[in-house]
Length: 127
Image (cartoon, rainbow, N blue to C red; front, side, top):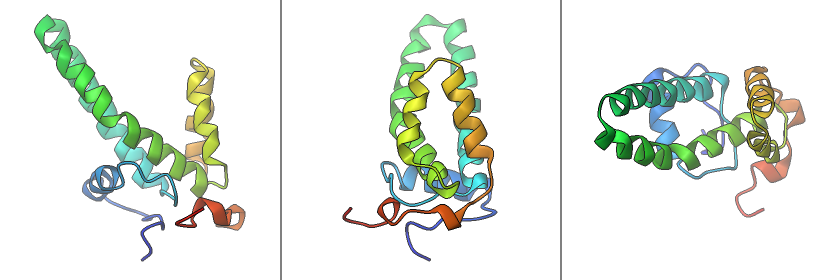
């Protein structure tokens, strides 16, 4: 398996391992399961840290550190998921549009794999 290939039907553990292993890898593709397991992981940890931070103002630094730690991997896995769906990774800029941009990204990330629409530059190592 090429390092740019998606891992279909990956488990929760595999998705989290790939999420952190491919920390800033924007080339390639990510399967739906890889994207959504990573999304769930980040969402749940964020909620837990947010609840803890509400109980203790000192723990707010943990929320900030978590957000900084997962910012680039979240961008990378979203970009790879868009590639897998046949979209340009540049559409991750939709995150800058409050609410509607994020909803549009979630819809695109929920679409099935479209390898017939993949572009070579999304996978080429030196492009």
